[in-house]
Image (cartoon, rainbow, N blue to C red; front, side, top):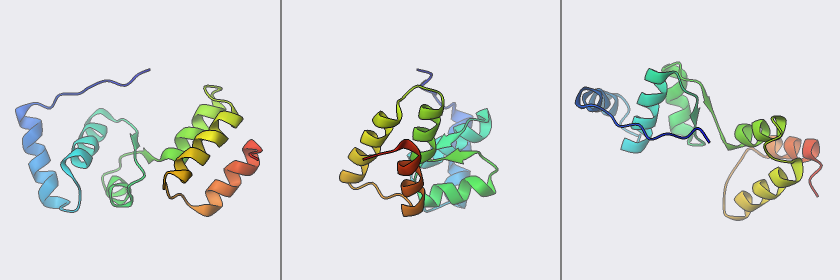
Length: 112
């Protein structure tokens, strides 16, 4: 489905050390994702607010879960009903999304 593992070289791990100095609030996993997205020009998928702010300053394209669900529906990889159910399941498990965006998607997908 397009997901690939990416190993970092020793030099790249060194670059992570610099990022860790610049962005102390991010985990090693977040820094690694940021680094790879930046170098490879990938879209970074995250709902973490701190990481999203950093992506803006690093000019890394970043989107979250709601964007991904919407893209899956738009590309007919998921039906609107499946997206409604997935969104409901995530929210029942404690996911927090902007209320206005959730309401808009629920109307568009005609969720119950």
